Length: 233
Length: 347
Ligand SMILES: NC(=O)c1ccc[n+]([C@@H]2O[C@H](COP(=O)([O-])OP(=O)(O)OC[C@H]3O[C@@H](n4cnc5c(N)ncnc54)[C@H](OP(=O)(O)O)[C@@H]3O)[C@@H](O)[C@H]2O)c1
Image (cartoon, rainbow over all chains, first blue to last red; front, side, top):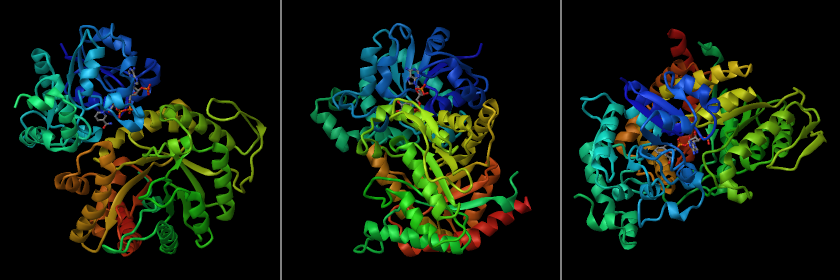
């Protein structure tokens, strides 16, 4: 049976991740903010074998779902519909879209922790957020090919991180387990890996250098425990 | 396949500020006059379109592109006078119509409005708009603008501006319609909207492989068919610099185009573009950087892959000097464009 994946958000990122999922042989269910009809045409052309549905229907079909909507709208997600799901958070705070929302970029924790706090009944894993959408499309390479780029994954539930690692691998990237969810701060906009498109070893090294950056120093000053502990390093 | 002889070639500028050396950088006023000079040059060299973007930032001098285009209109003969883009979301459709209809009159039918949401957001707070309303602003204003284009009295109601009742707007144009396109970035929804309103589509491809956009063009065509609208040849807008040798152009691109991407990216939290990323943009991505032969080959391949009918070279990014800008324009017009047509005919 084909692996299944749901995607909430049918914009730039959601459609590219959908394309990678289809290429990897997944059954893809995708939703925008509204009706299935609104994204039907986009889905038919860009994601020919995917099903365009409402968010609720997507969540009824699959236990694994990628969040590819604006971070500023995370509270429009239904806690109940997402209960028990493995949730892959690919969202970033983007002030040009989200407006000035200091709580979303607060360095004392990572944005994925906010999402996890809100989605109390789900397991939230952060991945796919630190590479631009057209690079995700261009850089995806089949398994075993060298020069593959890596995608960092963080999460508190190790089984779930394992599952996401398989998805990252299937989609065309080397998975890099980067520790607990709070380490997500190292992958956010303003961090040295954001938009860098690196191979596994380089990515690993660059994640470590977070403390040497302005944002890293600010996080440390704010008492962010991820930075103090230095993650799993 | 589009007839190689019919492909339209344009130049796009945001009114970047040329830097001549460590001490001498153009003032914004000088930068605007430089663009006017370049547009005249482009017209004389037979380039089809000059497109000027609207920005409200220190690094770009042009905030009022149609005013600059009006000046260009009076010293040029054939070149199409386009924007790239007019930020419709934070503008007033009635005024947009009036300004372009005026430009159309001044230029004797050479005006082209290129509307978009823009890749920057400065205009929103500046004109009192909320970024959260991004979508509804564009949708409603496009709706009104497309009604105004009919050049008949308009009755319209929406949430983003005062309603109109049988409002007749002037001047009327000689041709009966202002040429208008919509420019989009990577959002599939914007592609569908363009088709829904029946406008020609410009793809702003500022990074990554152009092949990725094939599906978007397919989406544009299918959407137009569904809404029973006409389609038009698609335009592509991308950055580049042309010099006598590849080496020279690659260094210029690194020091200027890449530098401007790094500066702009900083505000958005992007890591500076690496040499590897830069070179991949130059080789397979969306920077058209090199000698005339190299650039011509890349443009020809892109046009063929996408079956696009128009290419607009964004030139002068990142404080490129006036002389390097003029050299790019000259090589583009005299070497690259004829060579692209030739390459497409050979296939
Ligand atoms: N663009 C990138 O390169 C990139 C890379 C990595 C991560 N990201 C992150 O990915 C997210 C999406 O970015 P994007 O660039 O793809 O934005 P986008 O093109 O604007 O797409 C956002 C999508 O989310 C949908 N949406 C909004 N609220 C929703 C809800 N409650 N349920 C389901 N869908 C909803 C929107 O639908 P409507 O149109 O119906 O509102 C739209 O389809 C952001 O958090 C961004 O930071 C983006």
